[in-house]
Amino acid sequence: MTVVRVVNMIPAVLTNEAFPNWQPSIAVNPANANEMAIMADTSPPGNTGYFFSYDRGQSWQKNFTQTGDLVDQSSGFGTSGELYWAIARSPDGITATMHVVRTSNPTNTGPFPEIDTRPNIDQPYAYAFSGVFGPDRLYLGYHDLGHMPQSATVDVCFDALAAVPVFKQVRLEHRSTSPHDGYEVRPIAHTDGSVYVAYKGWRHWDLVTVTTDIIVARDDDWGNNDFKDLTDPDTYPGRRVAVGVPIVDYEGAPGLGGQRLNNDLSIAVDPTNSNTVYLVWGDNTGPQSQYRLHVRRSLDRGATWLPNPATRLPDLLTVNNADLASIAINSDGKVGLMYQQLVSGRWETHFRRTTDATGTQWDDLILARTNQAGEMADYTRLIAVGKDFYGVFPAWNTPDPSNFPSTPPTPATPNGALYLRKTTLTAPWRLLDSAGIVLSGSVDPFFYMVQDETTPDPPTNLTATVR
Image 1: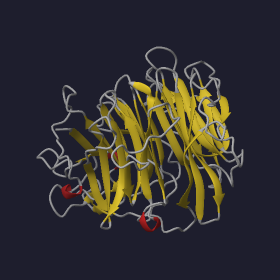
Image 2 (image 1 turned 30 degrees about the vertical axis):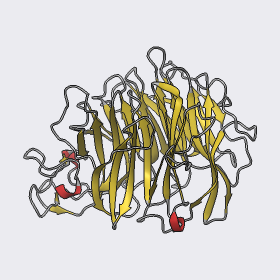
Image 3 (image 1 turned 90 degrees about the horizontal axis):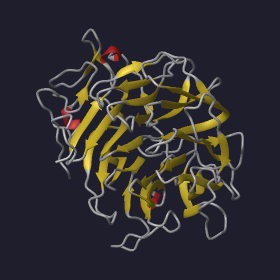
């Protein structure tokens, strides 16, 4: 039985807070998975900070000592133990500047050393990779509003621990784009030097629907070749996995349960074989133009994306009415996929894993089943370290054990999920402030860990029911 931990990781010292915490992202130290950090945007000014854990997510502390107002953020640990953090701060609420900082000790109060800065950007995504030996390499994907319309960009640093790190800016888009590329630019690396990047090349936007290509670029030498090693039949760098897919994207769009769409894109490379790549994205190609997630796989370094061997359809897996997708592959080659699906008016947070080598058979854990809460996030993140998976998702924070079917209540965790903030421990299930006064519900970040059955010394006695 898979061992699962789900933690509402708002620490006890913040039990009085009732602000929405959205846009969650996680970083896990690949050399010591006990050490991790979670960033999540909150509403108050001066909200630039993160939560950190030294016990594999059982307890969390806060470090909100950085200056400025946070808009977007992303982080990653190198094998060195250094935490790299890309922060998008906005002085005017419209445009943001990316500030990349680092620290060897997440408990430090800063200010942290700044190693890279880019003005006028959106949605930074930090990916740190060290390999077995060698320096920390850092890849920063972002939507560059200062380089329109071909805005998909990656900053590459081959030694992020250097006294003065040097970043090379690489433009990914080589085709005509209108009015710009998509917001998501997602790099991932392998120990053999293969680095993949997924991004969306917008081809048209009529202020209601985006028509976009889903593109994977590749570099076979850590980024030295400017991500031009994978070409498309149209001769341009970057393989078009899907062409001309529609995504509803306009201010005030009905979205999905109040969620803003057009932010689902995630890529993973098999650590046992850099030829194998998985990709997930969302678009409005479902029945009656429903929003739908698509999972595809390449076995030849992104050159071709094989159809489902059972159905001969292009996708290995599709999920209707679902978003916030993130994908990762563990050291055994198992694929993990997290998403949230709107089912009967409630958000279900699913974690799924492949159960064979075809990529078509998946098990299914429902980590949470919670009320709709309007807009909760544009993205989440899932990370594999060894055989185990670590992630974070946003959800309405009512501490009812029935909301967490994969972690049934125990005497130690009567809420099912582990709550660090103060709650009632019997029905009616309520959040409480430090004085025991009932608080209104809000959106909180929830940490989760899915530990492989064969991993020794499970850190928790909670088990999950695989559906």
